[in-house]
Image (tube, rainbow, N blue to C red; front, top):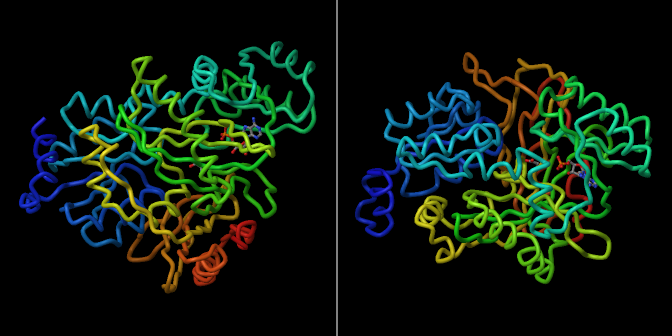
Length: 442
Ligand code: AMP
Ligand code: GLY
């Protein structure tokens, strides 16, 4: 509790700045590189560690990578105690699913994110669906099954397209939108028998297919209050024109122009407020970033497709560059459960991020490729699957880099982002060419 006391004092008495806050960021993707960039700008911060980080975080001054996996929670606790970490920020869902917040809290450490129980909003689709039904939160009709026979009965009695989802975590790849009954049967079978996603697929959730525009709606929550954070839209399919398999995200832009002031109010009233009230009422107050993946139907009604309990990737790479409020002041307000008193200010400009991936992503990638990247004015290159090896930057997985442009118009932001993409080279490199085209006239 000592660290909480010091940390809380920090912003009441600015003269204590010299104390310096030590921050640990958990994760290794572009989102975590963007978090490190943002947090590094805070005058309150003394030292930033990223576990395990990537080539981008390693190149930053005042930032150190720590070779601990995000899921090795006891090692992270030990490290946080040793290095006197004042606050830990969790990027990905896997450690949240394992209860990193619960374990850190038990050890007297501050860790920003939801508890394991609250994270179920993301970690179990069935939990999320049942929760939404209980609290009358608009979402697609659904039906959960655990046997092939029940799956076949559902498919036989419904029209295509049929949405087939693995119940558990599948890194954004556990959804099949089947356009034939045969495809639906095959997907359900592969999930149920454990071939597709192991235990995450032992329960399958079928859903009514929703049409419309997808929006990522982020809210920052302290367990008592939820303040709207930002909106974004991402591109989930691997290839141009929304073709190819689902991925974690191939590009994004922020804000989402289709979220008008009126729609924003409706989303807060009909979705966010009942969700946070329901979680608190059921004994799981939500702390951290709540990310509602919404479908806005053609007649303008918002429905929840899924909840996530973290920032998105690559959404973070378009949201955080627009954040003007000091990240650590925001964390302080969150820890004190006074988020409603902390205004959050945004850069009015538009941001566009283009993910530069390995051509094999989301399947088998070609790690170890040497990356060359010329610096580009007016854009930021966030690293994802990169590492520094013998002074050379190499690829280590699927989503390698994200180039973010920030400008007064989406069209200009897009030009900045793609200019930066042109300056990157590595073997098996691939990116979508249509990111933010649909909003370029805005
Ligand atoms: P999820 O992992 O639940 O976010 O689903 C991944 C993607 O599949 C979403 O971003 C949507 O593009 C699509 N999707 C999921 N559920 C539905 C649904 N009920 N109707 C239409 N598309 C969906
Ligand atoms: N870009 C989608 C996600 O982070 O889940």
